Length: 371
Image 1 (spheres, helix red, strand yellow):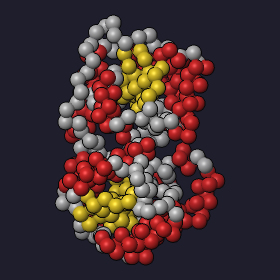
Image 2 (cartoon, one colour; image 1 turned 60 degrees about the vertical axis):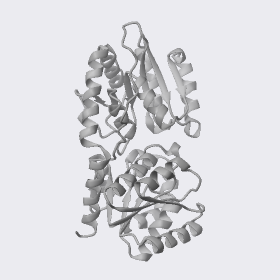
Image 3 (spheres, one colour; image 1 turned 45 degrees about the vertical axis):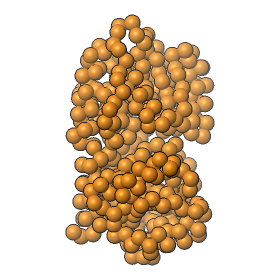
Image 4 (cartoon, helix red, strand yellow; image 1 turned 135 degrees about the vertical axis):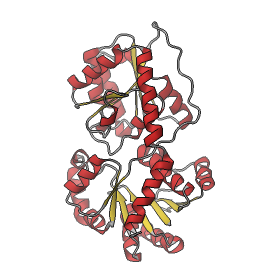
């Protein structure tokens, strides 16, 4: 089987889509699938990552620009060279992903589309008129040409159906890179300061403003909030201003995006992970926190009901619900939170490891090909 994975950009600041697209490409290659990974925006993948892809057997290619005509030429050339059985397009709205869709259609190659949460009602409400125009001009046709869709959760599958799309849906979650050697934790002690962590893009949909409001209500003693991530379109600056207005700046720390090694150290230094997103098709940072044995508070915009009462809290997305969950989590002992974290790690290891995800994805591709 030969699969071409196409994504607009593999820039690290894109967060989950970048990490999971690279992850599934590597995992499929390890399962014996021939994989070409195409990123249309050049210069966003480090030499180290390119070497890692090559070591796994993934053929990595970059486009030469983001303009439609040039991207279409690149896409047609790559399809003629690689002859994939399926073109799997990650994401929507970009003209470069539209170019790959058109090239695959012209070449008679089945298309699978991963909307990446972009058909969720909240996502569609952002830049609504621009998206309506894009849907009219090209995106509706791209969706109709798909032989199947890939959803990372049952919630995302519902969003696909609610949009009126009737093609088959391959529901397979994203995988998680399980760190073989997790950094050691802080030494427990009653006098130490505890850390609540948010690690994701600082984007309006991720819920940092809601978290700041909840923190201001609770004002937990002996706890610090660490917010880590890319300051996307100035939203991080908005959060800093809000934190100052609320008078909680002394208990908040902000940190720019970090690399993988530092990321795992930050996860392991946390006592609690909070991710009050408006909408997630999966929520990779939630899975990573659980991998690092950190209990999680998240909201019902995220498909993580399974953590409730075992390794976290799954609550309504409002200040009162968030405050109640934080109060309960912060009242536990270190040992109790550690026990929840250990359960979360086992959950990820058993259900969301990349080899297991890749095998499910292969079955989905085979169903598209009628095998």
